[in-house]
Image 1 (cartoon, rainbow, N blue to C red):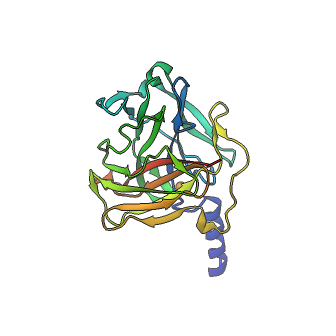
Image 2: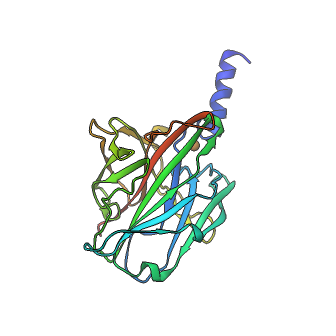
Image 3: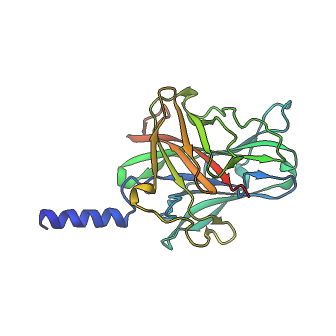
Length: 277
Ligand SMILES: [Cu+2]
C-alpha cells in the first residue's frame, strides 16, 4: 500500500474498532438512583462504551461486589457481600454483538430501610489486546432510598476511587457535579478523567440497550468529555442532559503492572441527572 493508502486503511480499521483507546466504562446500573422504599433493585454490571453502546467487552465474574449502607444518619455503615447474587448474562451491544455481563436481582427485604447504599464492584484486571495492557475499574454507584442521606460522601477505601462532593443520586439536569480523585485514599492531582453519557438505557430483561440514542454528536470529539483533576485532585463537570453520566479517572491506582504487562487501575463513579419539571 502507498503511504496514503495505508493511512486510510489504518483510519478505517480504527473507526471500525471504535478507536484504539476509546473510553471503557464498567457499568453499575441500578435503574433509578433515588428511590422510595419497597421496590425491587436489579443491577446490571457490564463492561461497555456507554455512549456508542458498542463494542461490549467480555466481563469476568467480578471477585468483589458489595454494598456499604448506612440506614439513617446515626447508624454505622455496614458492608454486605453481594457476589452470591451475580447471574451471568450475555448483553447485546448496538453492533449486535454480545459479551458476558452480570445481572443481580437483590432481595427486597435488604432495601426497605431509608438511607444511602454505596454499591461497589471490584473487577479482575481485563486484558485489552489493542493496547496490550490490563484495565481494572473500581466502580461505585450510590443509591438512596427515601431521601434520608447517609454515607454517600464516605470513601470505601478502594485503590482507585472518586469521592463525591455532592450527592451522586440527587442532581438536576443542567447542574454541575464535583468530586475528588483518590489514589489509595490520597487526592490525585491532574488525573486524566473521561466522562461519557449513557446514550441509551439498558433493558435488563432483554439484556440489550433500549430505544433510540438520546443525543447526536456534533463531532466525534464530544463522545468522551476529557478533563483533568486540579492540583488538589478535584474536578467539576456539567450535567446537561437527564440520565446517567459515567466518570472515569484513569490509571490512578498504585499498581501499574499485572502479569508482566501494564495495568491501569481506574476509578469509576456513576451519577444520575433528573429533569426539573
Ligand atoms: Cu474501548
